[in-house]
Structures are given as structure tokens and as C-alpha cells.
Image 1 (cartoon, chains in turn brown, green):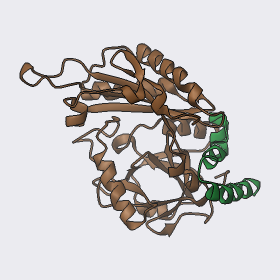
Image 2 (image 1 turned 90 degrees about the horizontal axis):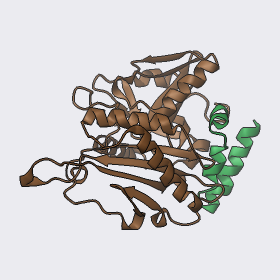
Image 3 (image 1 turned 30 degrees about the horizontal axis):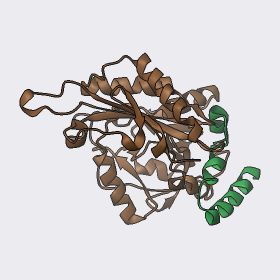
Length: 281
Length: 38
């Protein structure tokens, strides 16, 4: 970034304010109870990638959590583009950013009853390249933590909810094994679900494999990969897979918004496919 | 990864490698260049 995004503008409940001056109530349910949803769209070459798809997913998350953000998707899209455009001058020519929409149920009124209006924020943040750049070359070290992905009977994984404690605990566990490890969470039946940041894929027998949508976020990168595979006549298999299937795979990778595609070097210490990842993999 | 580059329109790997600390940047960018040539 040429300058810090802290000097950029963000949207908070109908107002455009410098990010450093943005304020949300300490009584907000998003803060006190983790009752909120969010979505993140990345720019590539200063252009937002698949914003409409991210906004559509955001509104599915809102519907599931029964939060009314008080505006239609078209207005959320318009405001999001506006915020991005107002912050784009902070980007260096070779840089990009992530555009977030974070919406909570709103501030509690205690004796007066439930929150009456959601808290709606839109802002840009720098991309944390340093957290994943090395892995493009060296491959991602993946381990399966003991913490399982919350089952959909308890909380729907398809919804992008601000409470990330399930993922964070899994990440802490993985980093006790290796400080650079990424957690690959299993579901309650021992099937592969997702990492703390995105979806997981592996290639075996010339087919692209990934978890069923039942216990994972409906990733935009994931759905884009499905389309790409279709265009390249690569079969996609969604199913219940265990670590065994990955150990025997030809290659594996993670898929998420900011890093996009990251090759996997190993799972639980077992090398996956070729030792060194490459651009064509 | 090459196909993803086409979809997003930029060399997203080189971009990321260009934003990390200098010592790692040179080493990793060199490795990445060799991988691309391979």
C-alpha cells in the first residue's frame, strides 16, 4: 500500500468516515455475542473479482442468521463499489486490497428489547501477502487438528459468520504441530471439510476432488474452479473423503479469496504428489 | 495456477512475492522463476 488503509474511507451505518474514526457500540451483538455475518471480495489488478457472487452469498448469510441489513443487494453492491473506488488511490500499482462487508444484528437496547437496526460496515483492508506468499513456492504444510468443524445441525457452514472461534482453535492446534501449518478440519464423521481460511481440493486419477458442500463454506473460488474444470473437461467429484484419500493423491491445494490457489506440500507429515509445486499444477 | 492467472488477469504469485521481506523475496522469486520455466 502507498499509504495505510487506516487513512481510507469506510461506510458505517449510512455515513462515510475515515477508517481510523469509525465507531461501533460496545453493546453491539457482533461484539458481545458474535452475531454477525461478513463477506470479502478481493481485487486483482485494481478490479474487484466476482463482487456480485460475494454479495449474493452475503445475503444468504443474512437470511440464515435472520439479520435485516436494511438495504437490497443492489444498494450493498453500489456502496461497496463506492468504498472501493474511494480507497483505490491508496493502492500502489502492483498492489491490491480486500473489500469487506461486515454486518451485525446491531446494538442491544437491554430493557427496551432486541436491537432494532443492524450495524452495517464496508471497508478495505490490505492483503496480508506475507502470510501466504512463501507457500506458493514451498507448498502449504497441512495438518488435521482434533477440533472438528461445527456440524450443520448446530451452525450452518455455508453461512459466512463473524464468529470464527471454531476455525481459530483449529489453527492454534495446527500451529502447535508446526508454526507454519494450516489446519484441515474434519467433520464429525472424520471426512475432510475445510481449512480455517478456505476450501480444500485434491487431484487423483485425473479428477478434481473436494468435500461436499454440506460442511464447508460455499467458496466463490471453489465455484469458479468448478467452472474452470468444466471448461477444461476435468471431472469434479464432490464427496466424503478422508485424509487417506489425500495421502494417495497426485496433488492437493487450498482455495480461498485472497491467496486464491495455494499448493499443498504435505498432510500430517506425508508428502503429497510431487515434492515441489509448480505454476502448471 | 496458470489457469487461475488467466481468470484473474494478473500474475498473483509474483505480486504476492513482491510484497514480502527483501531477503525472502529474492530467494523465493528466483525459485518461482525456475518453476515457471520448468
